[in-house]
Structures are given as C-alpha cells and as structure tokens.
Image (cartoon, rainbow over the protein chains, first blue to last red):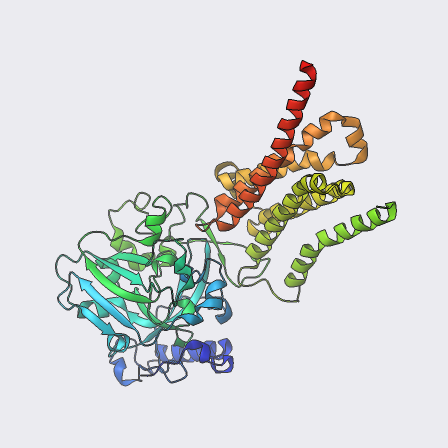
Length: 321
Length: 205
C-alpha cells in the first residue's frame, strides 16, 4: 500500500466540505432505509480499506452514532492544532509538520501481552474495517470542534495482542525524533510524549484508532499516520503519531500529568463541573463560529455520558479528574 | 528640535499607535482573516499590543537620559494613553465577545482566577493615570503627579504576571517580557537610589 504524503495532495483533490456533507446525508439515508448494511455487518465485502495513491480513503463505512452537528471546516481542523513536537503555537504544526515522515512507520508493542514485537503500520490496520465517525473534540483549553475521523475501534487491535490478566492499563508513546520534530529540542514537555488509558477505556468501542480525517489519510499536523481519538476526554489524551503501545499493570505516566499533576489528571474526562485550576471548563468556544458567536455549555464526558459513564461508576470524578 | 518637528513626531507617534488596531480591523473585516478562533486572536493581539506599547512607554525615560534627546518626553503621554486604549479594548473584548457579558462568570473570573484578577487590577490602576494625564492635572498635582505616575511600573508588573499566569506551559514569551520589564525597573531604581544618596550627602554637609 502506498500512502502519499498529505502535502502532496492538491487542495483540489480534497473532498470539498459540501460534497462531503451531501455524501454523508445520502449514506445515512441509505443506512436508515436498509439499502446498505450497518457497521459491523460483514463490512469487509463493501469496499477496500486501502487508501488510494493520492491519500484519499474510499468506501468508508458510515457510523450510526455521528454527532448531530456541522463538522468544523477542514482548514480549521488541519490549521489549528496543538502538537508541541512542532512548536507551541496553534498554527506551528500546520507550518512545520511537513518534516514528519509517516511512511514507512512501525509500532512497537510490549509489556503485559502474549503477542508483542514491532509491527509495520500496514500490518496493524490490515483486515480492519475503516469507519468514518463524526465526533466532538474538546480541548482542555476550552475550545472545541467537530471532526469526521476515519479509523476503527482500538480494542479490535489491542485484543489481537492478547493482553494478559495483569494488563490493567495501556500506555502510548509518540515518535521522539529531533530530525523530524523540531519542537522536541525544547523541554516544554517530557519527551517522548506519552499518554495512557485504563484497559477498559482502551477497549471501549468509542476509542478510535484513527488513520484519517475528512476522508483522507491524516495530515502530519493531525498526528499521521496513526493516532488515538478518545472523544469523551480532553484532546491531549488523544495521542498522535503513535510508535509504541505498552500494556501495564500499574497506572502509566502521562506527559501533561508529569508537567503539572494538579492541572492535568490521569483521567482528564471532559467535566464542566471540574474547572481547570486557572480557567473554567463550564463552557467552550466552538471553532469556526466567528467573532460574535457565544460560548456553548460543555457537557459531561463531552456528550458521551450514555456510552461511557458506566466506566466510572463508584469513582469520584471531582477527585479523579 | 523645532516646535514643528516635535508636533510632527507626535502626530506620527499617534499614527504608529493606531497601526496595530488598523491591522486587526482589516483582518476582522475582510483583508486576511483571524483564523479558527477569532475571538481569542483579537483578545490576544490587543493584550499583547497593549503590553508592547506599555513597555515602550516605560523605555522613554531611560532612552531620553541615555541619549539626551529630551523631546522624547513629549511622546510619553501619547504612548501611555495608547497602551491604556489597547488594554481597555482587550478587557472589553474579554467581557463582551469572549464572555458575552455573563456577569456571574465575569465576577468569578475577576475574584477567583489570579491571572484575571491581576489583569483587572492593572486596568483599574491605569484609570487614574489616564485621567491625570493632562497638562492641567500635571500642574495641579505638582510633585504628587510624579509619585502617582510611578504606578506605571506596578501596572507593568501586573500585566506581565497576567500574561505569565495564563499560558498553558510554554512561558517563553511572558518571561522575555518579564526580563525587559526587570531591566527597565532596575534602571529606574538605580537612578532613584543614586539621587537619594546624593540628596543624603548634601544634607549631611
């Protein structure tokens, strides 16, 4: 499979948002009428999983759980990012991430699992059905967007490594290469960037191992070629450009928590009642709203409470933030 | 320096102070754009410009002393008022565009979030300085005017702390502002100490 680097994609080749929305509406209508099979139902036959040579991902499986909101403009999704390995400014990643080489790419799997080793990116996604899922994305800085991601449930991959009974947590690492990432020369955070989830969170069907957005492979600034999207947590939990997955017995270290444990907890679930020590989390600014748009109230678990609240029964969310 | 050329320089200073505002207006209404998060872009641009102009205002006296260009003192009021204008617009943007005049959340911010408390305090302290910036007020207050206007250093410190306290983790920029402000403060303080020593020496005689 050949994946072109996203900067090689002409802007004319990217699916325009209007076409994208029409296509989704059609797919959803067809899904509702039973004309096409719903997610999970032998989707393999429906279409190939491989990206085409120009980076577009074709024949994606629509997903019934999409957020009922307009996706944020492609230019904002790919132009306003936190990816400190390429600088701490919001527009730095779009400007500087062209030095990242997402191909070839390998991921090392280690720790409490029976099947460990180093795997090629292609082998990891082979056989998995790529779905397009429109999720809310909420940054800890109190802004948010709506993104049509492309990926498959992380749990489907993790199970293939046969985690053992001691695997209570999963830790993830981002690439740490000063040649490709100018930002790691500065000790802004502890490099490599690392994140972690409980095994139950990692196996939750909403946790998406993400390879694309807006129907194309991930642009470098969005964490090419492989990232997590954990839609009920603050954005920094959704680690980018993953090179290592480690099954652990004890709660793993996470970069933001190491930087400031009081401000960034291990869970970091979106919670409007639990303010960041320096700013409110009660409301958020939806990107692309313009100069005169108001903030909107934030939702517990970013609106995914029905699906994920059961992961935290008996846990005090104010103490375990 | 002739009277006319000083008037011209003052006019140019006013114009120069208006440039960042003009640029922002142009970006907001057509030419260019304000990016994905326009409210934050306007807010941060106004705040940063206010702090820049404030630092320039504070640099006037040391530069005047160092270079002997005494006419520079005539620009201080223009610069100070411009800094006040930007900070006022910054605070207004925060209250109106960012918070939508939600008074309860504004009150919580001002009383409970240190960076906003500091910023708000800095803005409040700028008001008496702006009000007493006229020649008439300067004459009326006499030596008290000089003392009152030393508040500008406190305002500078509050402004830098306000900036420092709200960055998520990369504090490079506010630290640079802090260094510049410290140098300016140290310069002024050494001047005050020397003068006091000289004064002490004279009285001892």
